[in-house]
Image (cartoon, rainbow, N blue to C red; front, side, top):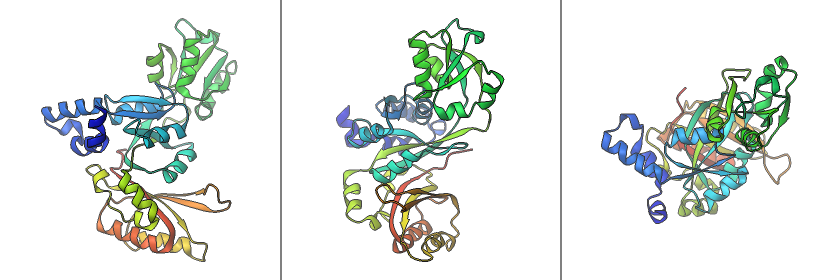
Length: 329
């Protein structure tokens, strides 16, 4: 099976062949299901995490491989241990996941799809534990921060930072803690046999996380790109794109000259290309230098290609992070 996966680059072929499963003939849907079973997908965090939910939503039936650290996720996809990875890139309240943004620039990977997951936080305990007994609630610091009102209304419960949402539930259940709870998604309760005491304890019900499905760039594409970063901006990614790709993510660095950012953004305005996001991040190893991240609402069409060529002329470097179908909703 490993030779089959390497030969046919399963994640790309699945996305190109399967499209929207509900719209396909039964025979093709069955074939897609069998193909997806062969795909191993890395996530950061424990089984039962929101990343786990997102991976199963994007590739139902895939084998999810948990990793302790974000860099480990990129390592295993880089060495071919897994065929794809699912990473959170942005939360609608907390903002961009900085480490993942940096790694998308540093590593030879390509975004093939995005997915928006509604984040619902639940108070999860070991079987038999009542709310009156709970004195501590473990979870990731971002999750705790998103449940401030719950802690205000329940001052007897102390928020305790933990490395992972699902990991907090695993910790509570495996150690049979009778005075503690974990805050995580419902998938964590299912995964570890916990009981949900309270559901939907997040402050903002419009809490979403944007996830990327990424794949390693083929060796030929990555080696060619490393020889000439500007050529990377106009390289052909057709073999990696899913049907209906209509959104592009890029990263670029401008030259330190007057008007450089204005000129860089004008390549999109001149072609009526709409930007859906722009932000800057410090460039690792180069203090006070920055990389700009841009999402724009075009796929691999002539205006987009011309804009990227033009950007390559005025920017110090350009990297196409992915071209993919925009998430619905």
